[in-house]
Length: 283
Length: 263
Image (cartoon, each protein chain N blue to C red):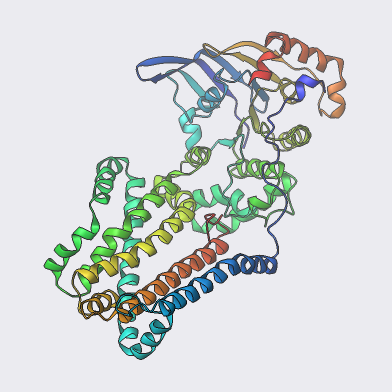
């Protein structure tokens, strides 16, 4: 064939043939990734302990890590109960956010007029500072679980809806055409193509939403509660019981971390089960 | 099913962007014989992909009529006479090759059709030379293999017409040559009517019974050419002096090959 006729777009084989690295070496690489930050963490804690000790800073101002640990141990029953309460608020609120957020995304993806009508309002609502809603929700629903769940949903549904909406629209136009060429209905296209395509996007949204849920629950407890970690922190600060405040803070941080990684693990499992491309940033 | 021919008369297509009308196709008449291999050849932007969609009833022209066999183009779509292959494979990444090929049959036949859809899918994969790759997901397939899967998918519903929109445009030259030979083999075994869009002159000559040369502004057919090279066509075909002649003629018509380079 002459030169001019062999012109072809250079894209060629788009996917490199090399498979993923073996699982064990991946684990080893993960560990290698973790140790610098683990090292830094230990150094920071030790410095903290040392600085407070050496400069003899009052424990009203700042609690030493060792104090926090012993405080957690001494108050373990109260703190365990509080953690359990807050965990429930976060998880129920998160699940509710996921359901509402995903349904909203599906609704606006299915009906263009609904997208035009509803989506600007959703974005508008996102601009209302949710923290400011907390007192009103307390006023309406009292100190019970309900206002906490509502606040969590108000904060956490948004990233879910936004991400999934993008995912539902990310379907290859050729696939749309192909489905239409055999007379597939909108519902069939949604179920068989759009929803699976949107899952990695949905999970990216869920991972943001789980951290937002923690914030929502704590803020709601600040605004009015008689139990939970947020309540403990506030109670501790009014009593000038700084170690208790730090104990609460520590537990919330750990809780947030655990929930985040649980979410990532769930995503990994689902992605592997459905052989979906996982959404890049699983740290 | 016997293959259908396509008969298009006075096809006009005008797209409006913000009040400005752009004439994409202007007065196209076209007869595609049943069971033939017909190519629309032209530079980018000459409306060949648009024409392909119109011929397949996937796009309604501004004016003109299309008949597929005895049916209108819309009815041909409804009775699933149209199979589609695109430039990119457009496979579902979470389904195996078999799952991808079975997709349309499952969709059309519902849950009860699942077993037969998979059986058909395996037969089609065998036809395109991928009998062993059925359980692989698209990520594990090379570009050429993925495109074979998409051809198998197009054939799975046993359409009478296969519309192919630059199906090998994204492949490297070597894979592309192999795919061309393979496609002719599949075509001769299934007896489908194939309408093939490309901007590669040699590909068009190698594959086609008939080439419709198109030009842009407005998009139209400027020449129709019967390619009278013997079949089956093989690697030797390209050394046939007539092959070179056809190529030369088309390149001259397209403006010394410059149009092909530019696209």
